[in-house]
Length: 274
Image (tube, rainbow, N blue to C red; front, side, top):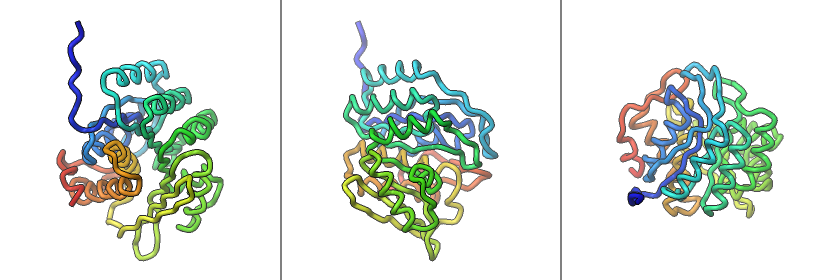
């Protein structure tokens, strides 16, 4: 006789991402961000990296068969309310996660990790094909940075106006919404551009925080966004709250280190709504 499964009181967010042993990004950082944003993280490792704050020195994909087995178990015993997908490794994993989100009718937030912050190419030709053909049509929100948005749109992004054009173009490729993140604007402002498939464009601005451009902030934003969508926030409210998570993390519990963010304590999430 099977024992009854105890489910957490908060919404579950499934994080599918690479494992960064340094904890500066990927699954470990994603899990912290999901908790900070008020949800319970579940996780599947899509690839294992040899990585330190200096860079990525190797990537080994987890077989898609293992991912499928993990998804089946979670669907049965701990069904999530949203999925966040980062570095997906094998192209088959992209298809598996996209199909999982569709079957459960839950939002999928895709952080299209193409290249590491130190310049290492992480997705090959087959991976880019899977990203365009499988993940873009399945995504509730795609969260590229400036470089990733440039690759997907085929446009040079030198300004906020360029980012708006790129976001509109990517939104027409299938995702319900695109959030181009981390743009620099005059007067030390940081800007994120949200464009929806319906044609709405929204600009989110905040004053730059010293040391706020390290490895890990993009993972944090996408994961916090998935958590707020899982909690039922409408899209723009979810984006605002996810941005607060990032800023609160930097101000309250992170310090910059070489190439990444160093988590100083477990309670930074308590600051996110202040």
